[in-house]
Image 1: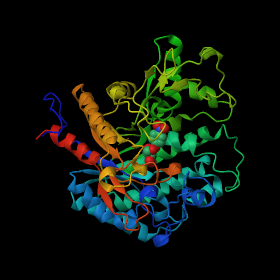
Image 2: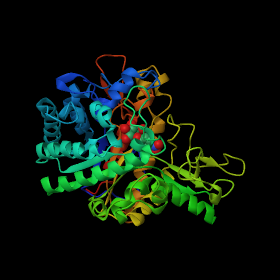
Image 3: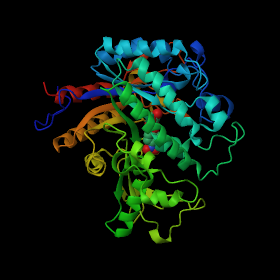
Image 4: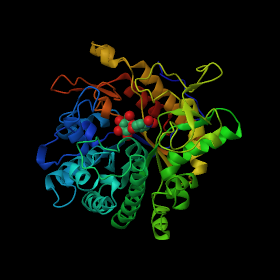
Length: 486
Ligand code: PNW
């Protein structure tokens, strides 16, 4: 029995990347192996009580540091043809700067070679949030311009050691999330550089943008046939009404989220004017040299696209909204909601109750509009969906393996998402990759191991950490096999 009734007018191009994504800190474990230095996540999870809701650490996670060969083999067995992984900066440079750790290089060399052996295209991310602890403590990590040189030096080593085989590079994963939710670092555990909390996101944003741009230019010079960008993220923003106030609120929401990094890279070399107005009292404007460096520092558009939200002006009107730290809508002055309407909740953006992550509502119906928005707002040669996925709520309470592996909600999410990509493709939007988050249950940052995004199940209380395919994984690859041009 076919799992889907095939729509003959849809197809994935032959060279489409059917991929999966993961990140070093969330899967590798081996936190002290082979000379690895500590990252801020290692330190925070060990030293700050409650940093993860279940007090997990990254010491073991999926033990992917030791199990990558079987992980890659299992992807190949499912027909996956691209693997997006991140390199732990602290494995290449245990101290953030200084001597290169050859054992770290050897590890990623072997991951890359294993991918190639299995005909899987390796895609590498340089920074997926695991800041070397020493750099955070020395100068505040992304809060100091000093990071630009150190990040570029790290990038130089990665490009020159892996670039003969890795042609797909992401410099930084989700700058918006880094700058708005990972700073300030927990008080008392890190040196205080006395940058006011409300300024930190924008100081971070400035240094990330410059570091990305430098790393992009360097990558193109070291690997001329490479494809490089950063991973932007966020949800589609749907105006609640067609009032001009809501339109303005939606625009501000784009400006302070996707546009914060996409406008400079794809459009102007500079931040949106709303953002510039907001930061002008504490940050210098970009120089024309810096604008030149930033503008065009991407070969395509990479977006982590999970969900959507309604946006609207505050009740008293957008002109009533002053951007300051005590304003709950700081700094965009746009209100957002997943459910809204005359009787609050009568309109919903997508089913909510079946998600384990409060920010992740099933909003695949909005996806084609989202892609068309990206395509017209930030033109680029093509778009990759560098993350999408779903956490099913009840998995952690199930006990029988056969029940756990039957994940109907995630399965329907993947089904609908693949259809949404097919619709976008049929509308002429050039999407070249789908990279599912994630190929295995893993350490979901501050939510620990309880929130499961995996296409494979892992019992974290069993030291074997055996992987098991979930039903959703089969749906994901079936959708691709059904629709790929033969
Ligand atoms: C991504 N949002 O983060 C990260 O890149 C992954 O490491 C993470 O495990 C995954 O999504 C699932 O959470 C996001 O609020 C965090 O829209 C927040 C959002 C999106 C992505």
